[in-house]
Image: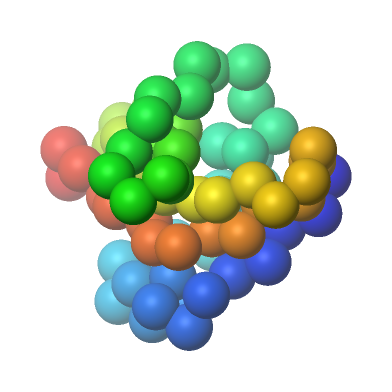
Length: 74
C-alpha cells in the first residue's frame, strides 16, 4: 500500500495532532469505505476514543492520495 498526503491533509494532521501512523492504520483496516463528494472516498476508524476519518482518492489499487483527515468525538 502506498499513501501520499496532500498539503491540506498535512496541515489538518498538524492542527489535529494526528500522526501519519494513525492515517496508515485507518487505510490498512478492514472498515468499509463510503463514497464522498467529488469522486472521493471516506474511511474511518475509532482510535483512542476518537473517530478518525480519512478522505482520499485512489489512482490505482493500493495507491491512496489522502485529501484530508477529520477527528471526531474528542
